[in-house]
Amino acid sequence: MPDFIKDNWFVGVIAIIMIAFVGFFIYDGNKYNVSSKSADGKDVLATLDGEAITAEDFFNEEKDFDGSVLYNLYKNAVIAQSVKVTDEMKDEAKEMESTIRSNVKSSYGEDYEVTIAAELASYGFTGNSALYDYCLNSIMEKELNFTYVTDNFDALKANVEAQSPRTISIITMTVSDAENLTDEEKTKKENIDKEIKDGSFESAATAFSDDTTTAPNKGFYGYVDKSDTTLDTNLLDAAIKTEKGKTSDWVTVVNESTGTTTLYRVYVNETDVKTLFESEDEDVSSSVLYAFLEHNANLDLDVIDFYASKLKIEFKDEDAKKKIDAYINSMKVGE
Image (cartoon, rainbow, N blue to C red; front, side, top):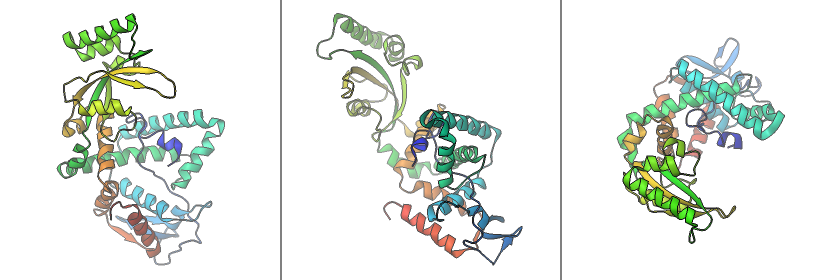
């Protein structure tokens, strides 16, 4: 997956979120020609509930047509006919598009539009609206996934629960030497401990935490589970071992690249996966949704297969269908 996509996972929904790809190529009329059916003079490869997907839709001048592109086009067609687009989704897509453009431009400079176009085209869509379509379809697929997980929650939750899901808050304190605190550092540490004991973790975080991101939000960090790769392993271990409503002991983390030493205390806000999934904090609920997709093998494929089964799909090109089926099988885990 290209860096700009990885770096913008679910942008505008949980800050960096992207799950899906949308759009259509103009497919070379000389490739995969189908004589059995046409629409407006264009050869048809498949129909979904009566809507034709033509060979022209699949054109890509730069590369051979393959199963991954076919599957993306197939998946996008399923999503498009399974989710009703709302004005709110459109607004989110516009915001996401703007954020991505800004982020990619800062990384790639004035040639950023070429970079975006090349990456999006490799996944099957071009044109002036390609990035917006990408963003809108990301939001639509998230809605589809959320609905499916909601309807099948009990059957899917075990694998997520096994990862000890939770939301946490943190207090950070930067020190010069954890084993030899200065008088000022000792005083600050004592004040934090006292405020946690006599007041609350939230008030202690607001008043004393050195973390400029979480301190304004009463120390709230967000969702983590055992698979988290962003937290230091010692800090994550403390977060996982701490019970709901409890605060960990101090954890020392030394950044090997900078030499900076930071002390942490962790508070666990919530551990019930159902409560987390239904959180009013969209960052949290979206993170839990991703956890369901990550920890339930083939769930993303199962979702598309389920909603595709509700549509009238007819392939007019058996070679295209074979490529899609082969790609799906190649993507399945444990089968």
